[in-house]
Image (cartoon, rainbow, N blue to C red; front, side, top):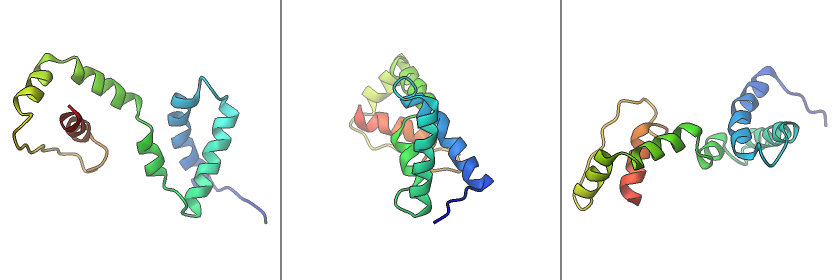
Length: 112
């Protein structure tokens, strides 16, 4: 069986490589990270796994910074303490309901 890659495949792999490099960079060299990214993409093509699921399992640099910023913010800590036992609604304007700041805030409110 001959395996071919299209520019669309390479584009998808290039999107996940920086995320993987951020998490695996100190442990695995770039060539192996790219190979692993192609393997993951191949699994996605045969619908064994989804790139969104893989990406969501690896927190981004932004997510880490935003969580740290919220944890160090006295106003946010006060808010968490005040609404801990009250019902709450979080409004957001992002088109993506899964990947946005409100999701991070929600998770931090739930997990304390």
